[in-house]
Length: 186
Image (cartoon, rainbow, N blue to C red; front, side, top):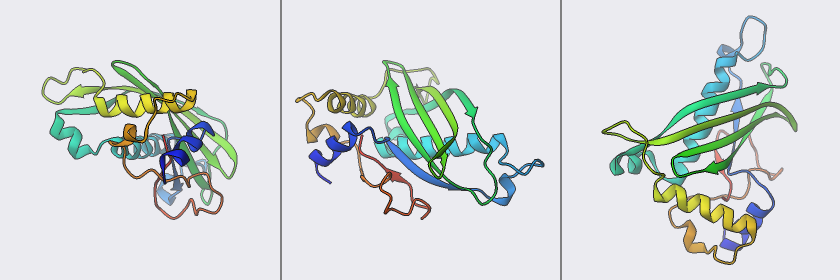
């Protein structure tokens, strides 16, 4: 995918990442619906997959930092049951000097069933104290903002630290349940 396609996807409002989830028998509680703790695991899977696409965990550790979670808010709109096919979208909605925020939406088909927000920061692995946002995350965020605003300063070189962008997560011809995470451009 070239830079023009990435820019079009960003301006079209596609998520930063989308991935499918499958309800397992052990995810179900006594009421016959997905237990609330499962959503936290799914959010971890989604967030961690997104973050590793910006910069691998190995590279983060080598550079001496790691993103950590500080807050999670979940709004359950509709229960999820065994057999439902779930897809989730993640959007990086804020990246400050110290804190980041992502918003996630879970769907059964096209119906929104759960909305979640997570906030966190990046910490130094030795001191365990928050540090300023690393360049790789700042570059990703700035490129996203530039493309959304139509800024001509956004260039393909802005994506040099971001790997494997695929513009197919919202494409109906893609099998969302193929057990493969899909990262959307941004």
